[in-house]
Image 1 (cartoon, rainbow, N blue to C red):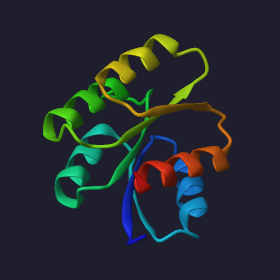
Image 2: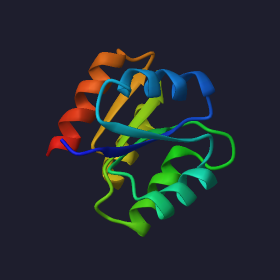
Image 3: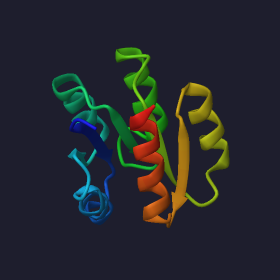
Image 4: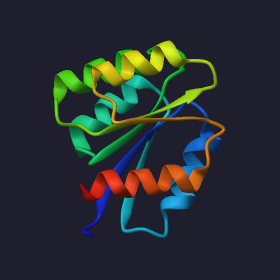
Length: 121
């Protein structure tokens, strides 16, 4: 698999570092954004192959970011990360084109497997 780019969008630094750490054993370049505006800028300049997007962030929430991403590029692959109990948001995200979602605290290996599966398809 050639080197793919994964963008992690989460306001929690710890989550971004954890994901970067776990993906370090794959031929992946992990990009990070702490908020929606950063995420949109990175997507425009870097064209990531997959985006891991947190639902709840200050400023622009995950659904708004997802809407804007899909306007930029309908084919973007997005996996949502949510806190427990945000099922209504999960449904909306799926409707907007999110491929999957993981509820925090998620099993990092499950997340990893899903990312690799999506990148391979």
